[in-house]
Image (spheres, one colour):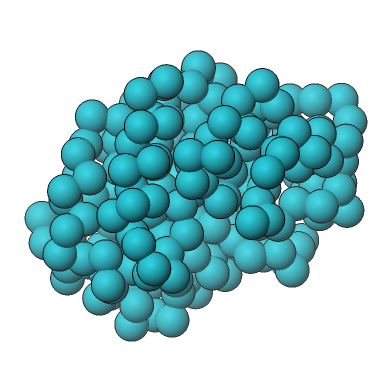
Length: 217
C-alpha cells in the first residue's frame, strides 16, 4: 500500500506561500491540507475560502479542506467553489450529520468525517456507506505542534476493521513525524497530514521524502 502525504499549510510561511507550496509539490506531496478554524469549534482562527481560492491557483494537487467549524453546512458550498476537492467536517459539529454529508456530496466534493480523540468510532455506524474518508485526530484540534496521542493507534486499527472492504481512506492528523509514521501506517492509515514535519523543515522536498521513506511494509 502506498501512502499519501498531505502537507498542512497551517505550518507554512504565508509570506512565502506560493514558493513553499511549489516546493512541497516538487518534493512529492500528494495533497495540500487546509486547516480551517473558526475560533468557536476550536480555539484558533485560520483562514476562509478566499485563501483557498488563492491556493487553488498555485497548485494542481488535490485540496483537502478540513473544516473545524461549528456550522459546517454554512461553508461547504463556498469552500467547494473556492477549489476544495475533499471537504472534511467533524462528526461532533453538525446537528444532523447525515444531512451535512449529503450537502457535501451535492457539490461534487469527496466527503470526509473527522473524529476528535475522545469521539468513539460508533458515530460512523450508519454513515460509512456515504463517505470517502475518515480523519482520525491524533491530537486535540486547534493548535499545531502537539504530540501524537498513542491511543490513536488502537483507534486506527479498529477503524480499519470497521471499514472492511469499503473504499474509504483513513487519514491521520496530529504529531506525525518520521519517528511514528511507519507505526501509524501499519495500523491502517493511508493519508498523513504533516505540518511542522514538512513546512517546519529547512528542506521541504527532503522532509516529504523522509516521511515516505520512513514507511516500511
